Amino acid sequence: QTVVTQEPSLTVSPGGTVTLTCASSTGAVTSGYYPNWFQQKPGQAPRALIYSTSNRHSWTPARFSGSLLGGKAALTLSGVQPEDEAEYYCLLYYGGGYVFGTGTKVTVL
Amino acid sequence: QVQLVQSGAEVREPGASVKVSCKASGYTFTTYHVHWVRQAPGQGLEYMGIINPSGVTNYAQKFQGRVTMTSDTSTSTVYMELSSLRSEDTAVYYCARELPGSFNFDYWGRGTLVTVSS
Image 1 (spheres, each protein chain N blue to C red):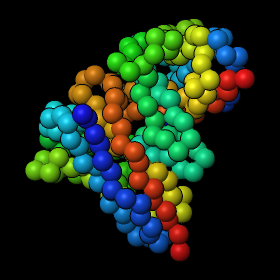
Image 2: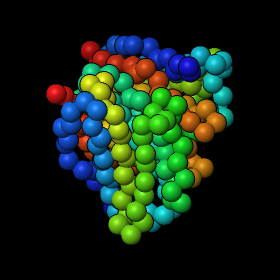
Image 3: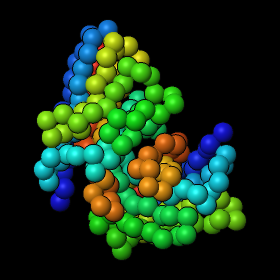
């Protein structure tokens, strides 16, 4: 069974930078896994942030950026705002099926 | 504007089935795939499967044999039916659309809470 692993929690100061990663149990994550990133706040549906590794949606603030880093998918938040406090999930494509990451709770403190 | 409007909360007893709907508007229904995702209380997101505009489905292995996804193009509505419910199926069920080949889950429904309890 494929497992996609994220950091359980990260803390960042307002205005700071934090990088979340997304690792696959099958090996290095490449662009062929078409990584997606989602933000979820309590009681809300997930909101799409990034698709196909690094593409922002029209509503995604420029401070969110996606990349591949050391064999993992990565989401970097630069100039973090208090409203960025949320749970973040990655999603990877495995040839016909998808698997979500375990999620990262980002605290802005 | 694009909207995916899901049906209301449901309560079922163990062993029963539930059918959740996801009605699309604001775009050409037959142009997009629809995926289903669930989230148990306090847990992460779990991928369930996909239905394409032609009604072809692909279910995650965990749900094969218990889930059925269907599509009604006349009402722009997609349905997800889960059978043989157990307490572990208590979750919020979400639908999300994807333009075929884009690998882009852009718009999501607000979710439907399904509670399985005797």
